[in-house]
Amino acid sequence: MIMPTADTLQTTIDNNGLLLAGQAANHAAARHIFDDYRARRAGHTLRRQRADLNLFGQYLTAMNVAPVGNFQAEHETWRGITWGLVAGFVRWQMQQGYAMASINVRLSTVKKYASLAFQAGAIDATEHALIRAVTGYTHQESKQVDEKRAGEGAPTRIARPGAKKAEAISIPDTIAKTLKIGHLNTPQGRRDALLVCLLLDHGLRCGEIALLKVGNFNLADGTMMFHRPKVDKAQTHNLTPDTHRALKAWIESGDCPLLADAPILRGSTKGEKLDTIRTITRRNRKNGQLETYQTGYMKERAITKRVAYLGEQHDLRGLSAHDCRHYWATRASRKGTDPFSLQEAGGWNSLAMPRRYVEAAKIANAGVKLD
Image (cartoon, rainbow, N blue to C red):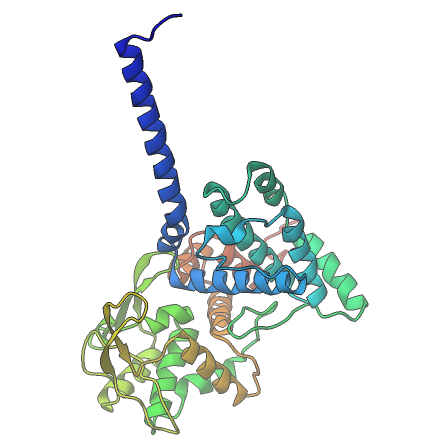
């Protein structure tokens, strides 16, 4: 029998210590993997993912396998999830009449969180590989499926508040002009005119408008400096004449908040009464920390509801901020804006989106020469 040397014993001890330390590190990483992922994502992304995972939970409940826990925060909630359940989620959404694009997005969300659960050890490697193999639908496949569903009298799109529609609502130029003029003889009318101008003349996203502060605007030189969180870009826009007029009316009327760091758009309670900006400090019930926030201004949901209301006044039911952005891009392309300028002004990371508007607005064979 060969006795181990002192060096061999020390090496074994060191290796065992490293093994234990590695396992402890894995457990710690598993506990925080969902928190780390969420910390890297924007608020609107997390809200959308939360809705996706809530629907996944509703599907499981319908299948009599109701989950215990939070799919967005606890990796143990994913233990027992199989590729068959994920594939069944896709089929279930089709049967319920959800839009194909929404089905694809929700599948992507489920697969992403399943991947995090795999890293945390809640899903084994074989099941993870099979879940990754579950695919959504291509554009052509989506069209074919929708044609079949429509032929069978089944719904092909379930609308939810704030969701993008399959086709944007077309806004006639005459109505767009009326919306931008607004009712400048009332506080609410002046606020609405500025809101609509930011949407129709600058193509801002709903979330971008909600973040605008008084200090983002310079009435003297007619500019607006703002941030686009979705693409992490800071931009400066020259205000259009209509936007400048609406901003001037909003400021000079005394309705605009006075502080530079106050939100530019105030909310409203009833009728023409606008809320005042209030700073409130409250203790968070979960962690006990004091949190300071402001109330009395328009958040994304309030903007969405207000745009829908304004649309209804002109028989444009279901009007959304995205429809207004679509109008802005389409009108710009029809006036001859090139794709590169449109991409920069619209805050897109690629030419894919602006090219859609430019190509849809021109005659397909206008540049073809045969003689």
